[in-house]
Structure formats: C-alpha cells, structure tokens
Image (cartoon, rainbow, N blue to C red):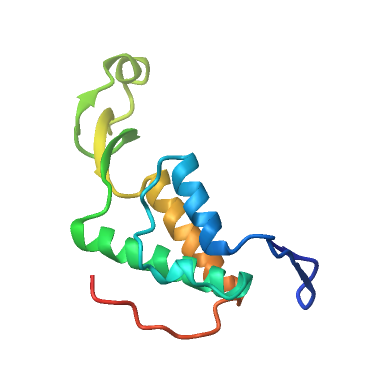
Length: 141
C-alpha cells in the first residue's frame, strides 16, 4: 500500500508475499483473468513499480477501448429549444401557452457517461500523483 501523508512524505507498506503472487491469489479468489501470464506486472520490484505498471496497463487498455470504440448509450434529456425534438411535453406547453419554444423529452446518444468519466478521472489522478516517473511507450494495440 501507499499512504501519502503530505506532498513530500508518504508511507510505503510492503506485503509479506510477492506482488506477483498477490495477483495470482486475486485471480483465483475472484475468478479473474485480467492479467495474462508473462505480463510484466508479475515481476514488480516495489509499490512504486507496481503503480507505474498498473497505470501503464490501464492506459494500454483504455487505448485499446478507444480504438474499438468507447461505450455509448442513450440518456434521457429534456429541454426547451426552438424546434421539436423527440416527444413534445404537451402538458407543460399547455400550462405556458405564451412560450413559443417547445419543451421536449428525447433520448441523446452520448459517450459522456459515468463509466467513461471514471476512466478519465483515474487517468487524471495517475498523472497528478507524480508517482509515474518513467516515460514509457505503450505497445501498439
């Protein structure tokens, strides 16, 4: 583990077992196959090295996801605009007949979803942490 105390001081907690072995235990316990055998995540020297490699793996997988297309979904929206889009809210329109712009309900196809925002947030936190020192080229995905 890594516990930052302030901007210049932190406590590094070292496990009794190797980090590679911890990954193997996680895979068995949670029926995961996220880390392939032979992956360099199994041979980490310490917490800083682990953090860098996990950050690299996250970045690699995000790039792969971007190449395949990020997750998109329809999100319910409602707005008052100059034109009818989706379903007209007749009840609201009748309650305010002096309003010229129609109030509508519609579904917007978007990639601005919590899942994608979480990935962006994680990558931003990695960049801000300053724990990734080495510039690594990501393998072509």
